[in-house]
Picture 1: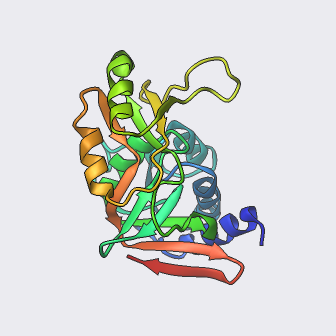
Picture 2 (picture 1 turned 90 degrees about the horizontal axis):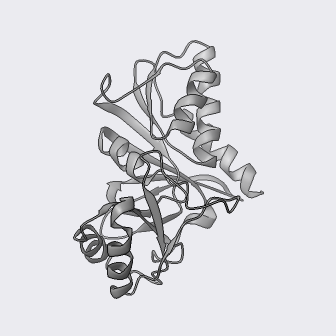
Length: 229
């Protein structure tokens, strides 16, 4: 099974968790895009749902597919949020995640916090024994960049400013902030690192999603399995 096949399989399985009448949070990234497209097919068949997206890209995609996509102003409480992750680790009776490879970590965490249930959808390559191989994204206010970067470095996190793919300059998030990708190495105590990062003035949010979900759908050569935290 290729990685794209796995993402497609897990996206299709995630749709089974959505029922008519639900308020659904739409994630961001390649797996979430496949989920949105699969969910839109069910909407076209009569599934009645309302949605809130975690990025401008997912918002516009949902609308383009005929889905009812609104904002947290209209739907401040959601039944389920479905999104991918860059790393998933079972630790301390919960799932710990690194997210933010798609630069939407702030909005993703906001939408996830509004949902009764956060369903993680990944391929098997994203499941790890310990977080930290994937660079940890930290969203930073532009003005604070000269202050935040050395303080992250002092924590041993090796921050690097994320650039646009075309090389034309720094990437801006949907909230017009910068992203610093931190090469952490192994993270034995994610809660401690999360607290240290959040204590830095100018940091908006970090990509550690700790104990926000207790169920991940994981696709691999053996099909889609459930990973419980």
